[in-house]
Image (cartoon, rainbow over all chains, first blue to last red; front, side, top):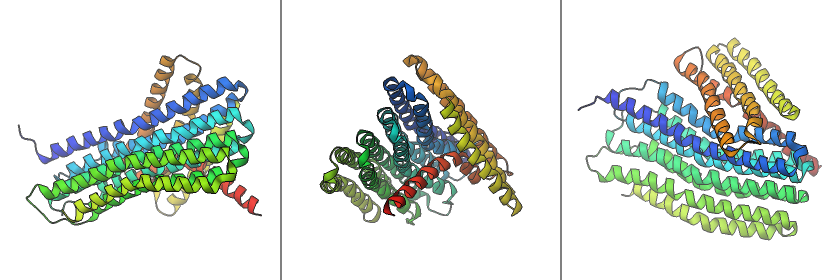
Length: 323
Length: 128
């Protein structure tokens, strides 16, 4: 049974839409569930503060949900837009769906961690409610950054005209770009969330350390985002570099492998950096006098964890430019 | 639940006021699709935010199974509501898709903006 190009484009749009919303819902649901569980625990510890805890939970969940609404936007565009009948639209639609779906997972889960810690912290230190909410929101907003990268890549894929490019190896470059941006966002969202969680716990444990805890949280979170930036860089190269037409199988496979290498390679380092940042922020809340030592140790630990992300970037660039 | 209602009221009124002023401004300068899209997205963003708050008490203090069902139902129902303006913006030329998306996220923007502003103000206050 043979199908025309328009049928394949429609199949890709439906599959891409399904992947965008299906994967995209995972993170937000887990993050919101974690927040609700922590709010339950907080209310059981301090029932008089149920109103404030509800309020914090609402605001935290509203931010945690953003990534899955990005996924919903892309899913709706894939499902309800009429796309041109060109064979390259198939990888474009699959790549956009995969990028946004996977890209929303880490951000959704990650944003749930500080929201949950903020609810618990509020039960412990009601007087620090304002500062806890600020730390939670800023921490959660940083967690959304990789999901925004994935959204940007999905939009670029959907709105760029690839019809003048050769089908091979462009199909692999497009799909690789989606995979790199999507998978590469998972670790950074989760890692950033771990650091922000420790910050809310720290402020609740020792309110006097709020300023250094917030500063080190922002520093630690910034480092966790670097691997998502590498993944975004590889995506941009794959989308915007002009590749010569080829009938061989190796060049497209090298481009697809570059996207897979950077996307999957970015997950571990970002989570590892998040764990290092989480520990440093928790340590500063316990012992403010050693901020400099703890920050230095955190940055050294994060730099070592980052090295595997740099290896992935190097291999991805070799696959794109050398192979 | 008064604190919850006050929070919803505060952010919703800020978002809709901004959307109406910005929307009319865009219509006046000849960008009616962007203006209408912004207002449409904001209205549905507010409905989503209000429903999220209204369903919170239903999710707490219940058995695990009931909490799961309420959470799942709430998310499913609210996503259908948020999908409405997006489908309208994709299908109808009267609404701009990007301004509709901006409207949907306007409440989140105001929540973040308020707290970032307060953090910057408190940091400046300490420096002085």
